[in-house]
Image 1 (cartoon, rainbow, N blue to C red):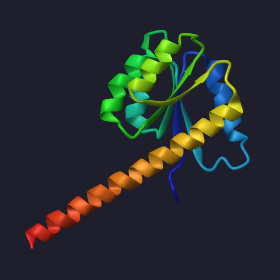
Image 2 (cartoon, rainbow, N blue to C red):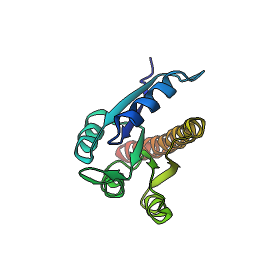
Image 3 (tube, helix red, strand yellow):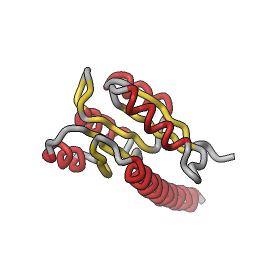
Length: 150
């Protein structure tokens, strides 16, 4: 049995987190999806470490930190995680900065749920392709090392 695709929503607004979870639960073909919630920078860090989500929906404005810092800090340790910025901020410069630091996409609040679902599907596809590529490189290195040992 395959593990569910884990999506973490880091947003200080419980209504946003709940709306995303409800929408994804009622998709025609959601597959196995597990939603992890975090309402703050600190909680997001702890849950990222504990649950290893494939996708993180990241709000920029958090009560205890900046979502851009969250992306910068965690992208180094978890390069395969796909960050999607969700923001109500009208500052396009902050969105561009998030993309420059590793976010794969963004969606503005109020959320267009069909658009968000499309962005999530694209991010999941990218993460899987990247995972397959990295696994292929790892397997090639392992074979090479084994051949050298012979």
